[in-house]
Image (cartoon, rainbow, N blue to C red; front, side):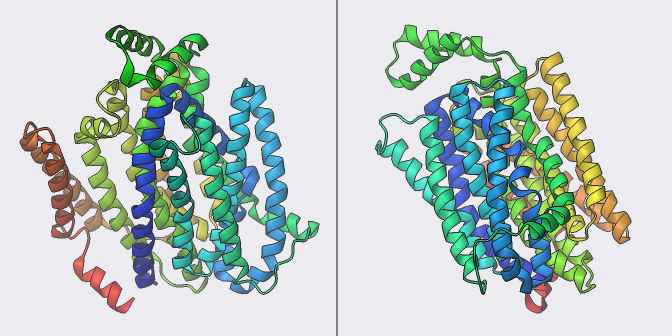
Length: 524
């Protein structure tokens, strides 16, 4: 099983690292630079708001289905038609509820239109994830890997055509960006459905009320967990945009026009643009845009941690069903993911300004540079959560996970209100709130796993982890200090050397065992 994990993880990572970083690190920054911080900040806040009621789209069905089909593959044909119809009904409920709540909290007609399209996109995303859960449960990881990047391939082609070739539109705006996503998600959903139907003996659209009620009852604990975790992971930008002051609409539009014509401004207009940016910096939409810039790299690396969980959940589920020990698989996943997390977090702390300048240019990134390393610190905690949370989900410990998630949501919302509303810290305060919440919830999950599975505390692994961290920090400090000032792009060499040397250090300290890796690949 461990050999299968490593092999499929390599395939999944290769495809996703080939496509998705280009979307996050090239396409999205260019879109944000094109439409401006305020417009992108509104989109980012609404995008995350559309996630908050995502539970109504899924109601825990995806996680329940992944675990259930992995343990009982013969149920695919029986469940597929009924669950597909249930997903369509939940989509209608979700769209209506999202629009009503959006109107209640004050979104105007323009923002409501954007929210409606984003809501439809969330339905398509949810449908793709449900269909992929069937492929994962059947251990069709290669097919799942291809579908996991298909939406981004389509979206990259459309958005790149808009940005760099002027196709479809003379000047790209946020709605163009959102419509491009709609096309990508829709085509991917159709292809994913064809792949799953091909593995099912029969597929007929039919409504079965008793079946639907039974599924909703069984998936309810999963639904509560997803709802709570979504709130403390996605509510940050929504609270920034809603709790901080709104900018003067006329000034916002004026700044947007100046940014659109950035290459043709007179010196006086450049000064006017800079003055407006300083004046509007602490508005909700601008701070949400700043948070989006800092969050972008975290979103990119989180993709890797998520891919671990995609493979781990069905594997844990099957191993637990057949009473197999999961301890070695947990250790393998933890050491691999934590090695990456330590290197990434440390590199981003030392090279914060250089990385943000590379993505967005040198203008007005001072706040982003402060927020970015704090947010990236969340990666280690999120990585831990994906491993131990997947194990607890597979084991059915949803009550403990829900208590943990509820505590995390309350803590995160309370800290956001204090930092944003009371102290006016905006994106800075929200980043600190996220880091504290993620660290505490990750620690809670480790403690729950240790108690439930009676794992012995591996003091050797813990000591080795701290030795590894100390070495990585030292290497980063040496590389950053030595290469600083070695030409305009000297930092890139220092960054590469630091990451490479840190990877070698992981093997040198035996945090990752070479013999163990070969043994897994050879004997599985």
